[in-house]
Image (cartoon, rainbow over all chains, first blue to last red; front, side, top):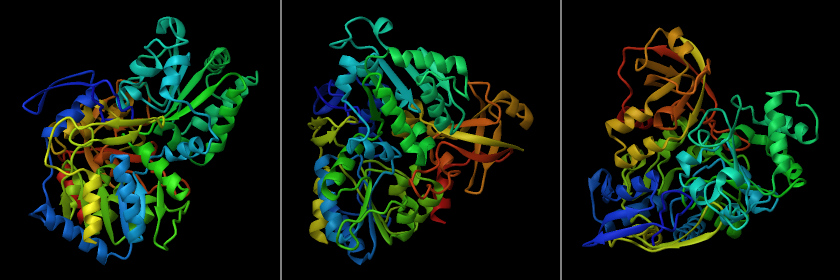
Length: 405
Length: 127
């Protein structure tokens, strides 16, 4: 069995057939995983220095030179690297006095509270074994974590859930649109954009037995009844919720406290990239902070206000690893990053590698390199390489750059 | 011209197209589109598949207008998260550092211009 690093579910039941060292057949991959596996053979990078093909050695020494000359380097990405590579990355950032920035997943807002024990959480195995209610709040796993419902949240039988899903599990979607997940679930509560805080207040009122002041009163009362009957609830929080909550995370937390007076209700932040949780936990363990930290003054420092915009504007060089910020960040941030000397470490071509001064090709973790990562619920998953390749994994590349600096 | 509120979302088919080729026609087709309510399509005087320029203080892109399969939601439009939609997203909020991906406003207008190419987006970033 192999592991798929296509998303943070890290599915461990992937069957792979090989012929002459190449993958000929796979089983159990979802559409996303299939696309991830097939991307082994599309748009791969090669070493480039200043627009010209180069050797790996040349790429390492140019990268080292850029970092040496930089006064305020930014090391960005990390959520698609193994935990081992992340560790090397934190050491490198410390040595360089760099700012270390994870892909700015909005999930940090809730993950911080989960890791601090302020929001109760559980593993996905607990969800499979115990949950009779799953609530997908601003999240659409059918598109982002495609096998969440079939492996854990809805369809499988679990220790306390031996009957079929129609009888024993209920799924609720709270979203601004009828997502693909919503078409599978029994209940959809549709909210206006940024309507989540109002929804929380209405739900809190219903749980206290009051009539909600806003929203569809009948549906809210139905939802309240459903929640009161729940034995074990799992709340899968997506970017839709977090982007809407912003500074109102306390409000969400008090709703969760209120729900836990009824039954265990557990919060699972839906981090996207396969080792986003790993990076955040490592950073927390090593520095006491999540998502981003600056070693510029020697000691790890974390500023609440330091947005990625600030980091992009204030750096004078950036090393981007396993991420494509030029595609995924707001234009103004992408633009600021495109202006500084970029070192891109990536198995695959992207807007960022196309704008980079140095491109260093890397092995795809889970396919061409082994290692470990933390699943979205914090469970450690180890993976082996499936196909041999000459490419170096991130951990090795970072060591080589570190040696050259 | 209509002023719309835009919410972005993720789509597995677009992700698949991106893994096959970020510069492919398929990825462009699945990314460079905006899902509108029929009422808004009518206000714009265009048919499904017609091109529109979507712009705000952050940027501007030409994309194809599609009839939403999730009507009715007049005044609200959906875009799949991509370099095209990111063109329209403002700076992340200072306190929480969360980019405003899920809720921004833009003006939408019919246009004869071709759909913005990904290469043009990259060129704008580097300019």
